[in-house]
Length: 261
Ligand SMILES: [Zn+2]
Image (cartoon, rainbow, N blue to C red; front, side, top):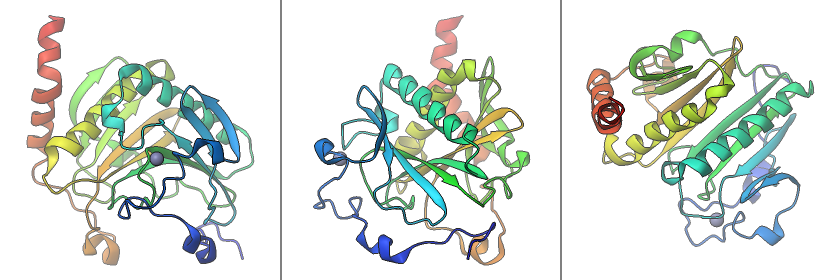
């Protein structure tokens, strides 16, 4: 019984999945490197492998373990490691998309208890969907917003028409030559979310999209999902997005511009 709108979740496999975000006593499966199976590729301490608990039917679920440091986070990586990770992950995402085996390929990251993730160890996911088109509810308007920063080929903004709400950051990338800058902008948005956005925020998602030969990254601070969205599909936009854009400019970009002058 396959569908091209819904993914079927296998509850039997779901029950076996370890959880190490809330239960910090759970042994981390990604730290135990000698026990990892289904490895597809490695580069330094970055590993791409098959997900041991493939809960989604009619998919190929893969995981990129970003580092050997369990307590690290994307906001803490050196520029070298950040750029290496983005190049590696984008290449694997592209490989799966080019394989022709999938209707679409999801590429995303969960971090924190409200992100929907279950493993604390920093990782990303690339999931090939046999029948579902991941882009059927994705529109360019969800990536337009108040510009925070621009470099050649790359823009960082805060959504004026977010997909869900209330604050969503976007990185727009025109050309893969500027992927390092895309990684830098993504890291700044994540760092802001984890340190300055709200005292109550400890979770975020990254979502990556290919759209009309360009690329988009959506960086979303996560809280409990609004009932207006769950029940009625109505997204909300914060009345603070102008302030947030200004604050990020001041914290992360003003100093740099001064240096460049
Ligand atoms: Zn770990």
